[in-house]
Each structure stands twice: as C-alpha cells, then as structure tokens.
Length: 128
Image (cartoon, rainbow, N blue to C red; front, side, top):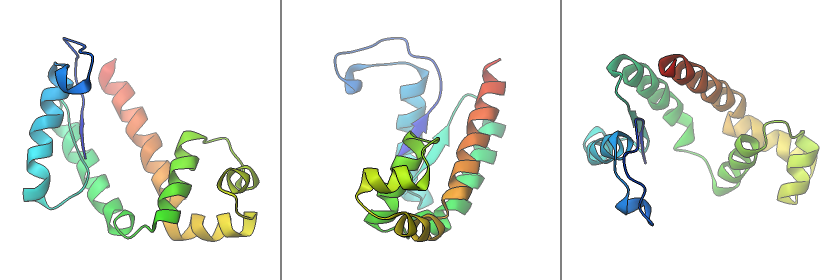
C-alpha cells in the first residue's frame, strides 16, 4: 500500500477517477513498492518527511509483516477506537480481556500507536 500526501484537484465518482498531487504521489510510490520490497510506504511533497516516515515504517515492518489475522484485527480496532479499554476491544472482537492483552503484546500495538501519533504530529506541522 502506498500513502500519497498532497492536494486533490478533482474528485471523481470512483477513487480511480480522482486526481491531484496525493493520487500522483500514491501511484508513483506504489510502483516502487515491489522494487523496494516493502508493503507500505509514504510519498509527500516533502522528501525529508518521506525519508523519516518511511524509515519508521520499514522498522515497524519487522513485526507488522508477521502479524496474524487476529493481530491485524486487534490493531484495526485499536487504531479506529484509541480510547477503548482492553475490555471494550475484547467485547468488540468477541474475546476476553486477557486474550486482548496477549494479542496486544504480540502485535506491538504500543509501538504502532506511538508511531501513528508521531506521524500525525509531523504531518500537522508540515501542513502549517
């Protein structure tokens, strides 16, 4: 997956019909994914931002690429609902809190959440 950051000059009925810097950046980076042998990278108008964020993504890929489906589901809920407790996440997934705790550790969610927060802070600063 490639994350393109930038402006949007045209909104089509489907995403493939839309256009702008964000879409161009995503397309260009997507074409590089296989060559760079990574599953997720970022391209923006700011090369320094890209270099730093892609380094963090590459490091996180060491454990993210090993996630099970169960771990990925847990990460999805944790990212979508950052204020949920482990009990609430467990109810959402139909598992007990102690199972959430085990998956949480195996998925390295604390590190993922820290990286996601840092990404948002840096992006907000770039957009000022």
